[in-house]
Image 1 (cartoon, rainbow, N blue to C red):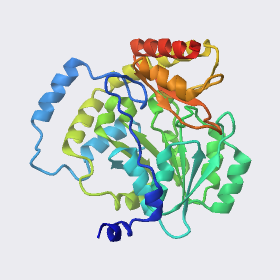
Image 2 (cartoon, helix red, strand yellow; image 1 turned 90 degrees about the vertical axis):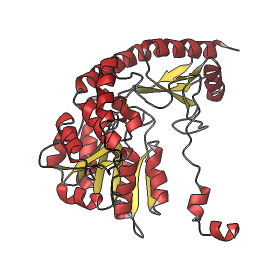
Image 3 (cartoon, rainbow, N blue to C red; image 1 turned 180 degrees about the horizontal axis):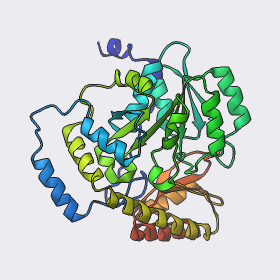
Image 4 (cartoon, rainbow, N blue to C red; image 1 turned 30 degrees about the vertical axis):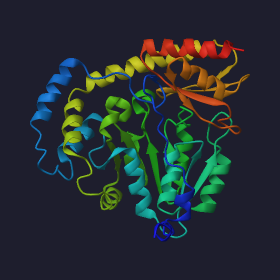
Length: 360
């Protein structure tokens, strides 16, 4: 019976590898682009009193209307644009893909990029076209133009800044992509607090433009809350796919409370941006590394004269977990990625990295 049951699973799903989350027990965790700072004790106490009053016996507000209003204000969403919320950006990407899934439909993005774009395309059984970035991780516009013309993508996902390369693409080139795209263009601005550049205020210029944000990188990764903004006619169609009550009551209460105190998150983001520059400066002084510029809260770097797997393991043995890209060739060959942490965490990483690079 088991074999009969498994026979119904699509081959593409059987061939997939589940998204792997590394065990960080006992380690300094610098592998997942998280904000290293918690809320202040005073805010935690006030939040606890709010959570104590939560009606856990009732379903949450299905549209999370109060939270949407707060997000509109804090993230400066234009008043004439609509918002739909998701259980993290991943759910929003899935909702978008499901909305266009049909025979012959394709989704497009730029590789290397956020792995969930392709994974979700596979989930919903639509083609994925990944246009290769240039060696400096910039957009290859001649190839992109040809690919858009050939494949007529229903949705183009643009991570801005990109993950894992941490760079923002040229604004004029993004404008061109939006203009020539036959379908929707989604600007995934997950790392906006660190890039401080956005297309949010340009939504009114392009009816086919959608901007996606998350509160994860702001310091609320545990809430799993994302938002998609754009023309009301498009958002209303995407909202039809949203499962009822997808934003739970504790997330709604917590997110709204913290956004009322967004100044604290802004201060944390500035600390991270400042530490990023310190980390970049110190890493660039270490021999044997190619360190790429960053407009996010993480840094991609290539190990030049050693095996990145060995360097990764050495850093891990020193008590610091970073991200091993595990790529032998191409743009990410021998590359590792580190999240910007607290000053102490960053110093621990730098010490471990220097020891790994100097070892025989």
